[in-house]
Amino acid sequence: MKPGMVPPPPGEESQTVILPPGWQSYLSPQGRRYYVNTATNETTWERPSSSPGISASPGTHRSSLPPAVNGYHASGTPAHPPETAHMSLRKSTGDSQNLGSSSPSKKQSKENTMTINCVTFPHPDTMPEQQLLKPTEWSYCDYFWADKKDPQGNGTVAGFELLLQKQLKGKQMQKEMSEFIRERIKIEEEYAKNLAKLSQNSLAAQEEGSLGEAWAQVKKSLADEAEVHLKFSAKLHSEVEKPLMNFRENFKKDMKKCDHHIADLRKQLASRYASVEKARKALTERQRDLEMKTQQLEIKLSNKTEEDIKKARRKSTQAGDDLMRCVDLYNQAQSKWFEEMVTTTLELERLEVERVEMIRQHLCQYTQLRHETDMFNQSTVEPVDQLLRKVDPAKDRELWVREHKTGNIRPVDMEI
Image 1 (cartoon, rainbow, N blue to C red):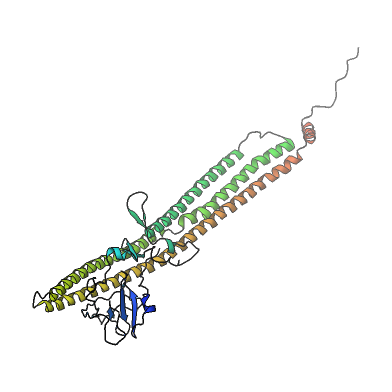
Image 2: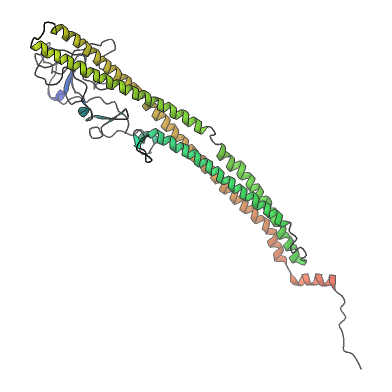
């Protein structure tokens, strides 16, 4: 679920009741209907009369705060331009709601939105499901907006922090793979060393004939195999271990910079949210003061009440403008955080794909080197096979006899 700044939809009444030209009907976040003059930006709680200049109710009290969400009307236009800070809001004398009240209560605001760790989200029970930025791809940019309970404790972990942890874990896995290949290289080097040493052994060196030649080739094949394994270990180091170890040497440092940047945006967002809540509280107090003075005017408790009402209305106007300014700054901070989150999460997604593909390619190189090593090992024993096929005991016996014979005169019987 992504953070949202959602204006209220046009009220149904606008489809059934004809309003004067230039007027439109909307629903406030509290569910209360209000009306906007798109030409003058005037807002009112009362339905304008079809006769120009005549209100549907006799009340004429005004306040500056228009019913708007996040500083914008449903049409998408600002609730008031910067140079027009004072806009009227008429209130019916029979209306039980506070004069100029546009800030929803906590219970009412939860009907449309909910705030989690200073981030505003559409309420899932009242808002339709949001469109994913990258449907069907399970992209990072769609599923890590909220915070998650930390399984190791009672706190929460930001969605972005989970992505960073995955990136750093991937870097650690890459490092451990490199260490694994390093151990494999050590085994190869030790194996080659032992093969070379064994090939120099003098055992059975006095074997003669064609079998002796085959045995000598067996010992030579060990020396050849030792050379093959030395070359294999050297290639493992240069083509697998070293690339794995050196890939993104500054990755952890870059991730920390990225983390600090997003964290700073979240802190700014939290600060803006605190300002909104403070301004909302101040507005409520000003509205209560204005309502109290309005009641005092009705019962004529003081001759100065009318002047006090003007003063209270100015303060209420200022408080309303301050709230809208704070909401606008909050929305700007949230939009900046949203944009950076999308950009950064997509970059992390790209980096992860790149890391996995890099490791896959180097592991493929490892298996290719293994196949080549096995092929070269096989070639070292081929001469042995050829000599073993030529071993001929009869021929060996002939050669040996020729070399070592003592005479071919056989003994005869003794004569009397």
